[in-house]
Structure formats: C-alpha cells, structure tokens
Length: 459
Ligand SMILES: [Fe+2]
Ligand SMILES: [Fe+2]
Image (cartoon, rainbow, N blue to C red):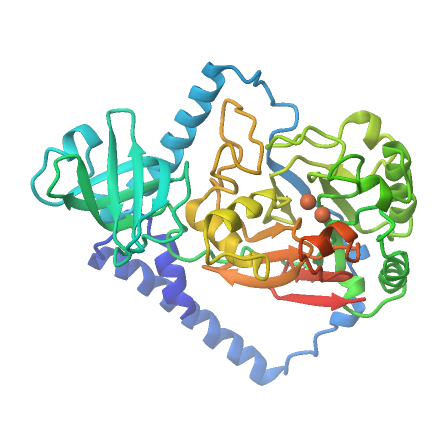
C-alpha cells in the first residue's frame, strides 16, 4: 500500500493514463526497497536490533525550526476600493479555476459564452453568484466566469452537487435545458485535494500541542484547568516531554465589546491588561516549547480576514520568544506544514449548508479543503478584506490543518491531512447558553511531527 500511495502521489493531478514508463519507475522503487530490506535483514540476523530508547529522548534536546510559509502580516495593501475587490475576486477565480481545470474530468472545458451554445455535454469553470433551493429539493445557482452569466439547475441527483455556497469556484458538467437560458448540471467538481497527502514527518520524536480560544479576561476562563495543564507540561510524562511547539489558533483574550453585554461576563475590562494576564499565563510554559500565536475574532487586530499578526503594542506585552503570525497562515514546524485558521468561516458554512453543524466542525473543515478556501462567501458572517491576492485560498495542501473558534475539540483525517479543532479554556458563558453552544473545554490535541499520530489530552 505504501508503494501504491507513493506511486499515486507522484503522479500529477492531470495524469489519468498510466504508461509502462510510470510503472517501471515504481518497479525500480520496489526493487531498491527490497534490496535494502534484505540487507537490513542480514544485519539483524547477526545483531538483533537494540530496543528504542524513546523515553530518553526529549523535545528540549532538539532546536526549534519554525518557518513562515504564507502570511498576510506586512503584506496588506488593500484600501477596500472597487478596484481592490475586482483584483481580489479575479485572483480567486484564476487560482481556484486552475485547480479545477487540472482535474481530468474537466478536460475540454470552455468559457461559458461558448459552452452554452453546445447542444450536448458542456463543461465550464465558474464562480457561484447566488444559491437557492427549489421546492422540489433541488438547487438553482447563478454562476459567471467573466465571459457570461448563466443559471444552472443542480438536481439533487447530480454528483457533487450538495453543499454549494456563494462565491466558491466550481466546475460544471451539464447539458442544455429545454429553456435556452438554463443549464442542467450532471456533475459539480471542486478543486479538492488531488490524490492523498503523504504526511511529511520529521526525523525527530517531537510533537506539537494545539491550544486555542483561551479567552483570558472572561470570568468563564478556567484557571484551575490551565494550571493543571501547565503542571503536566512542566513535570509530565513521555508525551508532555515530547512537545516542542505550542500552536495557538486565536481568541487569546476575550476582548472588549465583541458581543452584546459582554462587559457583564468580563473579569478584566482593559484589553492591555487581558494580554498582560495572558503573558503571565504563558510564563509557566517551559522554555524549550516554542509558541506560535495567530489571532481570532476576539483579539485586538482588524476583524477582516486575512487578519495580520497582533500589533506591536500588544506583542511587546508578551514573551519575546513567541512567533506571531496572521490568520490564516501557513507555517513549517520541523518541515511539517501546518495551516492555522481561527475558524470564523465555519459560521458561514454552518448557516449556508443544512448538513453542517456546530456539533461537528471538522465536517466544515473538510468542506474548506474540498473548496480549497477557508471562507468563500463574501458578505456573510466573516468579514473579508480584498487584498491583492486571496490569502484565504488553501493553495498548498498542509500536513496539519487546525482551527479553533467553535470551542469544540476533535481530530480527524481527510485525504491524509490531519484535521484538528483545538478546544477552549473558557467554560460556557451566558451568551453561549442563550445560543445553545455547549463547549468542550480544557482539551489539548497533540500531534507527533514524526508520525502524524494525533491524540487528545484532557484536563
Ligand atoms: Fe473563541
Ligand atoms: Fe472565535
């Protein structure tokens, strides 16, 4: 299976024909591995393998390797003009459109203006303007591509036709309807992840812990659970001593004026004091653990996404060794690619798609990977800043994709990508009670950067 996986992951997304040459390439891999295997067997027969001394190896024995791969911080140029919006959506359509075009099923796709003149099967790539459900349980969408605008009926029997949301980029395979202006879709294609991502594990036996939505300053912040977590980090077991990185995907503090009557649930009423308290909490984290902080919708930075990293007047209050990145951002930890996104876009997915709920935000994360975009819908709950490039596009497939925001916890996998939702350190607030949000607090998802194995530690 490993060879097969390696073989398929080596094929580019457009390949659909396997030639003898392709197979021979793999055969050579097989032969090489077999040779190595036989050689190692011989050695083993003479000298039995030594037992692995994993318990002796600790994260503090290794230097940290953090690289920022993609981040809006320092690159924001938008002023919010019409021109900015045009450029932003053109970039989105071009980038995601190219990913859809790479799918072999989309070979022979045309511009809408040309495709709609065809009397038989037609294929085109488009951006969705509007989505509405029909009485019969089908979906009607209006789409465009710069050449034309058309209405497409997506019957509930169409492959891939569910979970359509405004402003996502899709491929349509369909045929003309009776009415000249209507196209009937047979299949909807998404950019998706071609094949399966192979976890690019590092050689060192170290791991990353995900610690999200701390909400310092809220009277519902769970100090006792945090203290328990810190105690475990400092004199812990084999797992805690393997932790080299702590990635924090937003809502570090509760903020001020984020939701109605928030002041009644605040313990600390000053935003700077909230971050000072956060600094105090982070002091307990052992020095060898490197912290990465990305903001969320409660943090003191512009709410429109992509959000830049926390500003200097805030970061100067926090430990100087912390790495600050934007939201979303992509970083490499020991070569393992981690996509960090706070998760505000989950709100829009849940309100647009009936099958997506707060009970399982990981399903919304799968939608994000499928659409290769963390918050496609403009004008919904997620404010979007029209930067010259669309930083909300998932252009590179990560090894680990983490979100927070929904105060839930879970780990899963989609096409080889580890999905993490990073819990919270805030118990249920009155506001959440009113809105029927039941958090799962004080949990820490931990992923081995060597093997990709994920587990959740409860406090
Ligand atoms: Fe939060
Ligand atoms: Fe949030």
